[in-house]
Image (tube, rainbow, N blue to C red; front, side, top):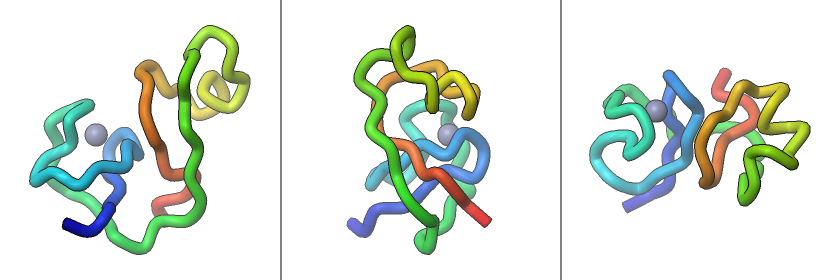
Length: 61
Ligand SMILES: [Zn+2]
């Protein structure tokens, strides 16, 4: 399946639903992505209010 980004938490996934928050609304043409390995050390993750590991889209609009 094609990668898509969750509209709620911006998690990038290929499943039917977001594995992070369970939301099923998503977009396929998101812009940019970051890979969060360590939430504590990632400044971007904090700025984007990401609270879990994984790939996240920078822009979903
Ligand atoms: Zn989500």
